[in-house]
Amino acid sequence: MLITKMLSPKSVLITGCNRGIGLEFVKQFLQLTKPPRFLFACCRNPEQATDLNVIAKSNSSVTVLQIDVTKQESIDKAKAYVASKVEGDGLNLLINNSGLVGRQGVEDVTREDMLKCYEVNAIGPLMMAQAFLPLLRQAASLSPSEPLSCNKAAIINMSTGVASISENSSGGRYPYRASKAALNMITSNLSLDLKTDGILCTAIHPGWVKTEMGGPNALISTEESLKGIMSVLEKLQGEEGSGKFYHGVRGDLIGW
Ligand SMILES: NC(=O)c1ccc[n+]([C@@H]2O[C@H](COP(=O)([O-])OP(=O)(O)OC[C@H]3O[C@@H](n4cnc5c(N)ncnc54)[C@H](OP(=O)(O)O)[C@@H]3O)[C@@H](O)[C@H]2O)c1
Image (tube, rainbow, N blue to C red):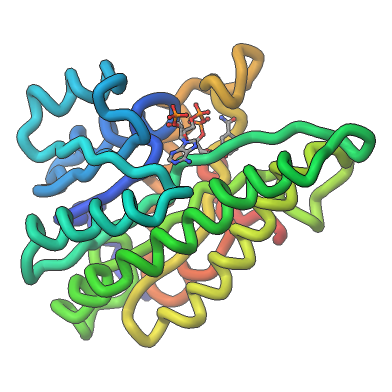
């Protein structure tokens, strides 16, 4: 049996950190017993990310980076910056958190609604994984005998329970459900393709969370959601932690 090691990745990159779950991720990583040496907190408009900039000002490990996951130049520019900072250590943990909800139903959904959600929720995370792959490989190569984990090298994709095909019981929300289901397939595929590189890849549903996306009637706060997610991240050890779809709050698996 694997012994669970404390969550302590040396470097972490998270998208969509200006608000909601992404902002709370930054706060929770800073509260770890051993916080990351490099915490790359990405957002589309750094100059407008007031709360995030306050955190970065008082924590030298936090770098606010511009990334729009639909713009390849911004991904490539951020990757070059991260590579210059982490040098030979690579990147331990990539969290594809940014997301876009599209609630349109069968009568009113448009081609544009579908494309927008696919760009942000599925294609963006895949292009992020592709761009940061050399840095994740570099990190994994430093501890070849260690089991897969978020401390070694991992990609975590923020999915949603409503992307589950097996648990779909209410219909609707075509852009969101379909694009996040595509993200789930990308997650499963990456876990297979990157296993031999020593890179873990898993999808997590954060619960129904009070954010701009979740709305005020959601069931839990970002703190409650992240408390669960951080403990799931810590428990992801070995091949059995990869290629899965976890409920971040309950800690159990969701059917694809
Ligand atoms: N809240 C929930 O109940 C819930 C439930 C299930 C899953 N999730 C998932 O959890 C993740 C975080 O959700 P949240 O509740 O924190 O949502 P949120 O409050 O709406 O925040 C979404 C984040 O994604 C960013 N984003 C949107 N488009 C982007 C793009 N093209 N490039 C880069 N960043 C972009 C937003 O940046 P801007 O401010 O610039 O728009 C914002 O930082 C999402 O993937 C979501 O699908 C949330």
